[in-house]
Length: 397
Ligand SMILES: Cc1ncc(COP(=O)(O)O)c(C=O)c1O
Image 1 (cartoon, rainbow, N blue to C red):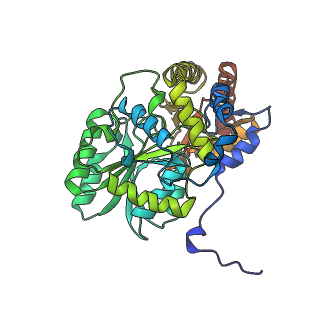
Image 2: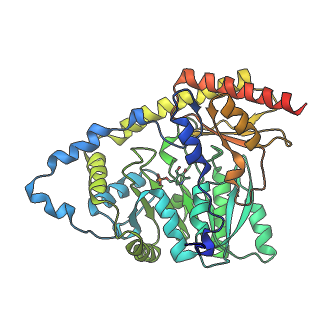
Image 3: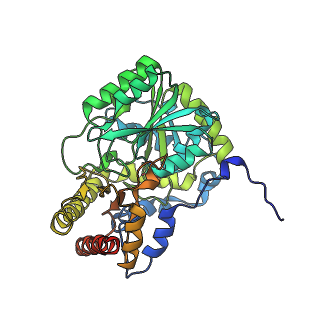
C-alpha cells in the first residue's frame, strides 16, 4: 500500500521518548533516571502469586468473561482502602480499569468531544496528554507554582469566556514535578469547579507514597458536589504488570465509564483482579507501604544531597515529599533536549521537560526519577549529569 490513510487523531502521535530512553536504560552501563517505574525489588510477588494456589478444578468460572464494573471482592477492598483516604464510596461508585492509564483513556469517551477545552497543569503527565489527544480536544496549559495549579488563572480565563470540559490535575507528588497541591489550593479548585459546574479529573496514583510531611486529603475526599472523578492505580504501590487501576465517581458517571469499558476490553484481566483482591485481603498493604516509603525516602534524600553537592546553584530543583520524581529547572537558554544528548554521552538517561507540556511551551526542564537506582548509582548519576552540564556549557562558549 503506497499511502496509508490514518485517522487525523494519529497524525501527531509520536512514540514516547520514555520508551526510547528505556531501551538505553537496559544497558547496564547506563544509570537510568528516565522511567517512571517503581522499584521492582519491592514487588510482593510471592504474596500475589499465593492466590494461584487456591485455583483448583472447580475454578473454571474464574476463567469465564466477567462484568465490566470489575470484580466485586476487589471493589470492596478498594472501598476499604480509600476510606482511609477519607473517600466514602459504594460498589456502584467504582469501576476497575486496566491500570490508571486506561482510566485516562476511558475518560475521553464520556467527556471529550472534538474541540472541547481541557485545562491541564503545565507541566503534566505526558501519558494523559497522549490519551486525551486521541479524542481531539484543545488543551489549555495552566501554570503551576509551589502550591499546585494556579486556580486564579483558570478563574480569569472563565471570566473571559473560556468553557472547560474538565480540569485534569495530579495533586499529590505530581508526575513530572513531584509537587503537591496545598490544602487551600485544593479548596479553591473545588470551589471553582462547583461554582462553574466543571468536572475535575483527579489522577492520583502516588497518593499512598508520602514519605514525609503531613498528608492532605485527596480532592475527592474534600468534595461534596460530585464534580470529582478520581483515578487510582496499584501500579506504583503493588506492581504495574498486573495492570489494575480503578475510578471512583458519582454513580451516573461510572455508568458511562462502564459502557466505555465494555467497548474497550469488556473487563480487566480477572486473574490479576483476584490476585490483587487476595493480596489486599490477606496481607498488610500498610506494612508494604511503610517499606517502600522508607526506601523511596532514602533514595530521594540521596538524590537531593547529591544535587546540592554537585550541581551549580543556578540549577533549581523540587524536593518532593513523596512519589518518584524530582524536577529540574535549567537556565532559560538551555533545553532539556540538549542536556539529554550530553547525558547520553555520559551514560545517564533523563527525560527532557518539554514532553510534559501539552503546548511544549517550556523547554528548560528535566525530569529525574530516583525510584529504581540504588543509593551509590544515584550519586554517580548526579555526578554524570553535572559533567553533562559542564560539557554543554563548554560547547556553548
Ligand atoms: C500521573 C500518572 N497517571 C497515570 C499513570 C498510569 O499508570 P498505570 O497505568 O500503570 O496505573 C502514571 C504512570 O506513570 C502516572 O504517572
